[in-house]
Image (tube, rainbow over all chains, first blue to last red; front, side, top):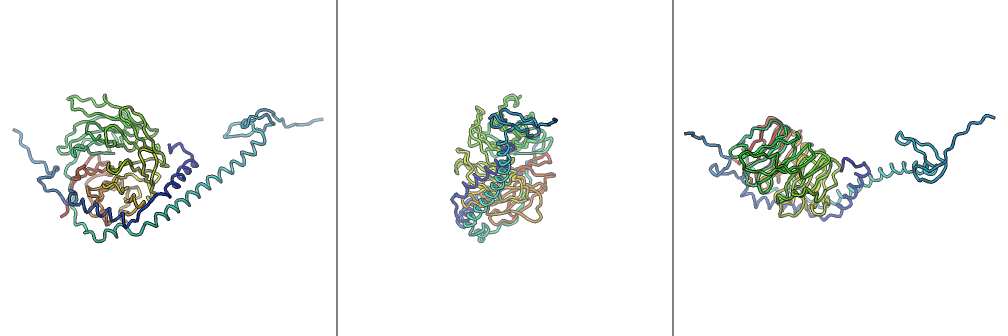
Length: 69
Length: 398
């Protein structure tokens, strides 16, 4: 637990983690960013918060009045 | 003749146990007896200890520098540049559609049911409520034995909820539709941490729960047996949030903590595969981007950020000079184009993920927004606040 560790133990843990991460494989932002953009563009048509939902299909439409007989 | 001798005690050294002449030494206000060789060794060790700490720190700094260098090599362009020719978003109108009233104190957490209609919420007053957000009716309610129920989650089946907080546990409550349901009686304690529970989430079944805690760890538990399946060590301080990767992307999850780090974990091995430390303060919320290739974070440093997992770097910062209060919770719209973020200044800001600009600001809550989730089908989002209410809101471009 982090709360029980000494400063030295925390540093060692961080160091071991950093050593691993330096070796990670990475891709260019121009490539990965483009893929993020393309994902959004492919899904945008179905995004209700982006395009809006016709009132009659909206599950959260204004509650109608009700009559109690 | 009068001679005063310094009495030399001969016996087993408290450190090496060899029989030698001993010297009295005070260690942490306790009297010990060590031989002169051990006294000398400890004096050098003390020096060595300080040297070790300093050398560890400088090694960490130089590794961080190397990591930055490696990451910078791939940073050939900014995200908003990639998105230059994407059409800008128009004006947004957000409207609160439902207000859920019933909690007696600050709402701390909420989660949607997969049926896109039910919501579970938890509060400082110890209550956990399940609502039908269409009708605003309360369908279930249970009082926890502790206050500050900081985490709650809906089971994928819709048949149970999980929650916890200052009790250091995560408990699962099955939901029934009995007339006089006694939820507390069916409570099942699953997770045990040594500090508060800050976040919990079922995995893709009702059988396993992932938890995050103030004790600095995350853990994966088997619900039925309560067994600890995997623990995740790496954060240097309290873990405040977690999010599971969309099921298509495999077994990983991301966590954020008071050490300003966001860490991505392999659930099977327990190893941290990537970590990011670009925020200037606690990370209160993390959420995967819908495709699983990135995640967003919200922090006390008043910014939200986007981290691209394949480029292994931060690729966008969502901030404004006028926003000075911490972001407590973030979530994406269905396509990932919009990022909704709740803040401690009572507002909800809506960001254009690609262009980095704010497209809308939502007022309405009368205190901090503490939790925010977009509904499973993306038709609305729910925000919970310290003003004791939850609001379900939707919007559209005009």
